[in-house]
Every structure is written in structure tokens, then in C-alpha cells.
Length: 144
Image (cartoon, rainbow, N blue to C red; front, side, top):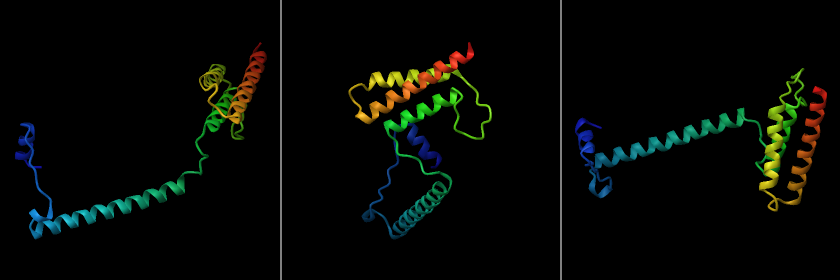
């Protein structure tokens, strides 16, 4: 964009170039076709690279669902209560306030979704919340 183009835009005027083939000479048409071809090749090449990178580095993830969200909250709550399933963690750190936040989040979801879940989701939410509450109380008793 030249200096004159910028000046025109600042004044609220725009330079319009008609790219319809009927109004272009042969040189402009060839230039436009070459530009479109380069753009298409770039998109094709970048898409292929991105697809290869994602497939090689990202593990297969489970389907996103309400049940998966509940399981994730449950796993996080269990982790913060010191029940880690990761064998690399020798002495898991207990963080009761964060574990309580996970339980409160699950209780909030139970209240907000009441009557809108299928039976399996309701049962999973109730059982996961109850289990975390039991583990939480057990950790509280250990601290006394």
C-alpha cells in the first residue's frame, strides 16, 4: 500500500480495483491466477504439516461429554486429597481447600442440572460426589 493509498483511507475514501476478468488485461489475469495458485498451495502444504504434527504429538483424547467432565472433577478432587494414581508421585500433596472446591463444584452441577441428565449421568455425579465427600471427611479426621 503506497502513501497515497493510506492518505485516501484516512480521509474515508478507498481505492477500488475491479478484479473481474472482463475489466482486466491479460497480464493482470495471469498475475491473479498465479496468486490464487500460490495461496492454494500454501494452504495445502500448511494443512498437511499441521495434520502430521497433531497426529504425532497429541494422544488420543476421550470424547467430550458431561460424564467425562464429572470424572475429571472427581480425579482432580482425589488428587488434591492425596489419592494420586500417578506412580511417579511418591508423596502426593494434600490441598483440602482445593479438594473442597471440586466437591462444591460437583454439588453446584448437581443442583443446576437437576432433571436434565440421563440416569447414568445422575448416578455418576451422585456417586462421585459422595465418594469425594467421604475421602474429604477421612482426611479431615487424619488431621485431628
